[in-house]
Image (cartoon, rainbow, N blue to C red; front, side):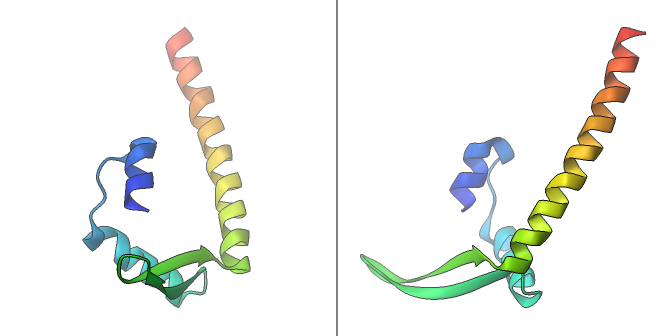
Length: 81
């Protein structure tokens, strides 16, 4: 997960930042976590969105897009003035 976030351009994400967030999401029912045996090493914890998490993600995505559109509008006005 940390590697995916870094590859997306968010820079290195340390476990001390990532895992507390995942734990909060799990406690609030937005993600589910399960341990699975590792093929070459210790068991690993896998996370997936719950239905509530997917619903929250859809709403947050819509909110973000609306916000980003507003910011884009302001920036266009500022740069064309």
